[in-house]
Image (cartoon, rainbow, N blue to C red; front, side):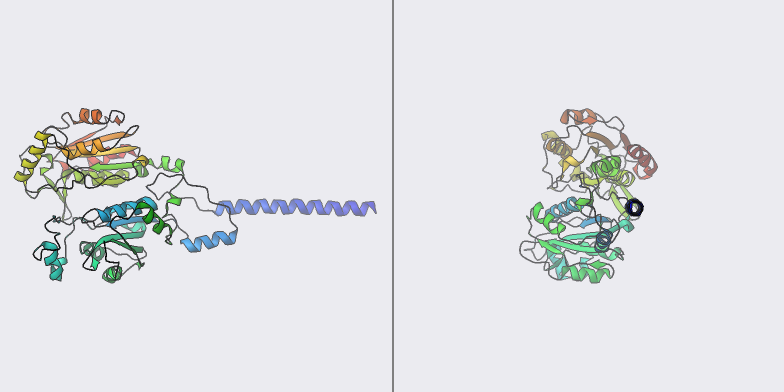
Length: 431
């Protein structure tokens, strides 16, 4: 009898070991099958580890979220800055990248006077043929890598502001989730999204959302969190702090620049470094803007254009006169746009033209508005022969608790158009 009992105990013990071993092997198999995280965000927020799930739960998550990590692009046209604010909130909530639509001929305040039947926007509304607004750029670098595209605009006469039409027509949205959003004081989204989807002809266009002109960031975040976005598009997939540190070249870099592209050829005039322009593939850029875009293509990061509420004239003589008056009076022009979540950036790549041996006044405003303590500022300048002049020491004085890098880039305005390789080589040092 004792032998029988002992034999039964041995069998049970062996079976238990086998079952335990089997469970360990299955657990290891699940871990190996789990896809590695992909860093798709420009955010710098900590992320909690995903909770454990059974095979069935993991499968459902993959089905609901599309199974792959996707990148988000926030495209927007903003006439007064309201839509730009919403676009910034969406980018912060999704970890997405921003792409601003800029008319080749910018709208002035007079152009946007809805009450004047002779204003530009009124004429365009009355004559549909005039709504074909040429944009400075419709081409997005790495377009195929984006799975989700937000498209934002103000509502004009019940429809989307027509400057977005050129972008929608110029791009193939096949395989992308497209989510329109708009700003208005009274009008709703209406059929603006539907009309854009018909114009595009491709893409999975969602219903979209309308925001009040002064909607809060919390309102926008709540809306974004309620969307069924592909995996990797919400701030919860921004990546751990360690992952972001390893990907600092893209997620923790801000490329801020000030640039004024003039309408005239001012070769030989050394008054303003931004006098020259760069023309690439039929697109016109200011010198400093062109450099900034190449830098972003090389290192990633966020692009931030320093703009003033009062537009500068694009003709040379009036521009020189206005700039001269600003410098004589040490004016600080009011800025049109502002940096959201400055704390997420470790380094600021700062570009500007040399104006009479000095920083442009809007760059003074920019540097006095923010505290870059503990951050690294990496300057680059475009000029007509004066290089940096004393601007590096000016930056150090304005930001005494930041580190101003001596790894700088100085380009003559006459050489900018042919300096892509040099720009990329310089920017490549930051990867």
